[in-house]
Length: 249
Image (spheres, one colour):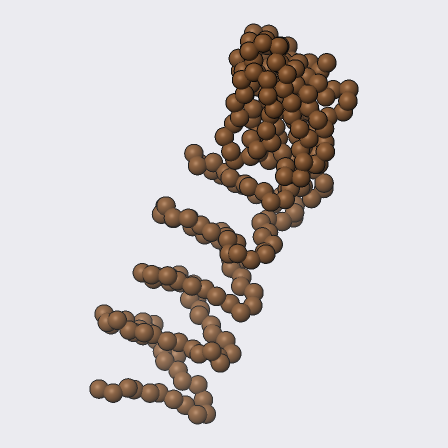
C-alpha cells in the first residue's frame, strides 16, 4: 500500500477533535517508524495533557534545543531534574562556552542547599568567589596535603601543611601571589615535635609575621585577602596543653 496523505487548503485538519473520551493513537504499531510532527517553518506547536500526566520516553538520546530562551516551570509542584535513583551524571552548563550560571535568588526566605555523599564537593577556581556584599568565600585546594620534615617552605598548592621538626627548625610561607584566589585557606600544623618551629609568613603585618610552634598539635590557619596579604583566622592549641596556641615572636 502506498502513502496516505490528508491535506486541507482552506481549514484545519482535525483528528479526535470531538468530545468522545477515546484514545488517539499515532504510530503505536510495533514497527521501527520515523514519526514526524511539524516542520521548520511551523509557527508554533502546543502539547496539552490537561489534568492528566505527560510522559516522554526514549531508549536512546533525547535532545531539547531551542533557538531562543527555554523555560521549565511548574505552577503547583517541585521541578525535578535527576530525581530518580539511577547513578548517572548530571551536567549543567558544562559546554565549552563563556556562560553565566545562576542558581537561586535573593527573594525573602529563598534557600540554596548543596548536599554531597562520600564523593565530596570539588570546586576548582579560575577566579575568586565573593559574596554579593563583598565578603570572601573560603576555598581550599583539591590536592593532597604537604608534609615537611625539618626546615622548609610551605607551598601554596596545598591547603594543609603537616610539619615534623627535627630541632629548632625555621620555616617560611610566601605571600599568596596571583595564583592563589582571595579566600584561599592555608593551615600549618605541627604533627611531630622534635623542637620548636619558627615560621616566617610573608604577607602578614610585621608585628605578627613570625610564629613559633612549640607543642605537638599546634596549628595556624590563614586566609588570603589578595595577592600580597594573609590574615590569621584561627589558631589551635597543642595536644598536651590545649590552650597553648602557637605564638608570634
